[in-house]
Image 1 (cartoon, helix red, strand yellow):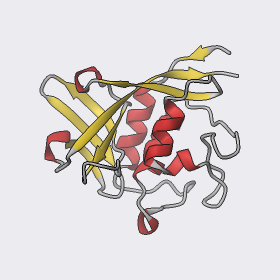
Image 2 (tube, one colour; image 1 turned 45 degrees about the vertical axis):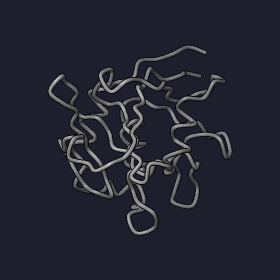
Image 3 (cartoon, one colour; image 1 turned 180 degrees about the vertical axis):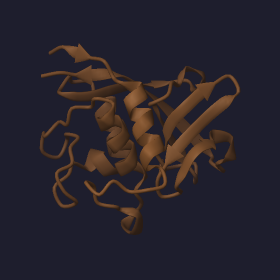
Image 4 (cartoon, helix red, strand yellow; image 1 turned 90 degrees about the vertical axis):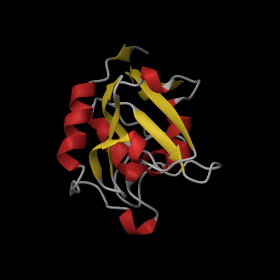
Length: 162
């Protein structure tokens, strides 16, 4: 399997376009647990993330009823992107806050135990990280404005091609 390039600009452009709206091609999970990881997955997909249709452990969206847990679940998305076994779709790795780039993901824990929010990085500089997100809809929101107890950063390294 070959690795393709993740198109960060396309992911960020998608994030800006849909941060305060909803793409009608996707169900809005706002009222049933939140829409942040669905939005993050859409952004990653816009950056070239081929869907992985492996039942249960893949990363795909067909409809609200036909999707992988990794498409809409914070922990499941982390597990899919950092998987050890190479398979089709986007891949990533844990990184330091200072290593984030536009199009990467930040996951926040508000209780210090579980990660429950998954915004997309739209800008990263020594001056700070700006995020776009659903559930708590935002675009160009400073990471420093969130009241969180823990965070983890996920650098998207590419896309595994079939």
